[in-house]
Image (cartoon, rainbow, N blue to C red; front, side, top):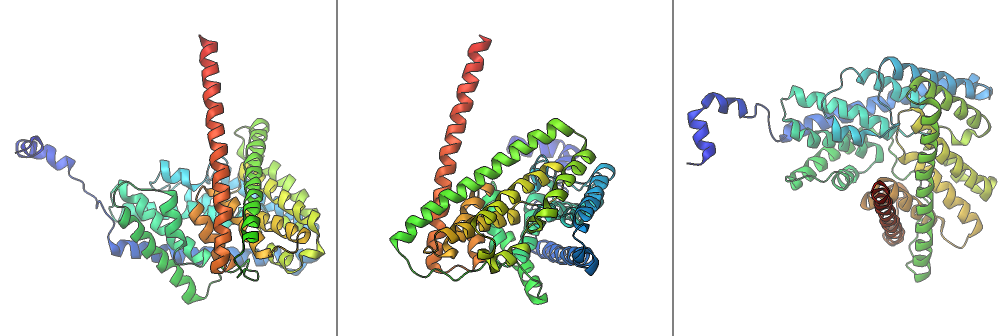
Length: 437
């Protein structure tokens, strides 16, 4: 008999305290249960946001009075600041829901009401944030709460929560596969890998199916252009160049986040309410003159796509730059949201500007290539970027070849830059050691 078995015989009371009292692995019915809950919640949450957005921003008085834009921005920014200060709502100043998944997977009863309100107010404020980031925080809290009620083991709550996120994101994106790929690429698990993928596939299909049956609009096919069906060497070279451009856009996003983050920390430090009001003032001024860069960009993008010639290449590039700067400012001010939709907007603006300068290159190749490269470096998830871009653009098989080339280009650039960063860090550490010696 092993030592462990001997302990079990000689100390039955001690053994009883060490036996897990919660289920170690989610059951299929639990995955189906949480998928239905989260998919239903996501539809309700999106519907409420849509109703509120229409009621305020699309009523005749607001649309006919341009001065209402800064007033609306400041009003909702004030509400974001208040719920952040008094209801302790989550924010993305120092990281998104991914950090919450990694550090605190248990329920946050005290923060959920504030986070729910902040999610609506942030999206209504005109700040450059997407719905996916806010939704992630809410889904994490709901899933962790349900997992406790189902007496699930804490170590498996991550699997359970990611299944819930799959149900939400597949519905939003409009694909039965997207979230399973994203979760598998972003959150590798130790052991139970096939089970982990299966849970995400099952929950994701349920979420997608519920959205499809109800007919709730998804983001799939929303940035679709005439597909590229030809497979040529010239287009492959174009895809490499486009991948470099998308990588530069992603680097600009990173630099903007760092620069604006340091500036906000220096000016406001930990004063969250003042940060949001300060950021809101800047956003209000910018969007008064350039309303095209308000919100996440998922609706505004269609007007620009319909007639990019009416804006011109310089203005389109200006839209991209402003969108990135507002994205960084929105995150570092304390608004709650995600970066994917604003990044897709900025990438599309850059691609449309290039298309006006080089009309011989298919616009679909430009748009999907810049988007894929930028999202690859943003998320550090190349397969997800390829899949997301392909779904959103309704890409042809040959077009996916160009998307992959642009993505690989971004991965190579990212790897080189990461190696250089590590080398600089090592040299800095060695220099510090010599100084101390």
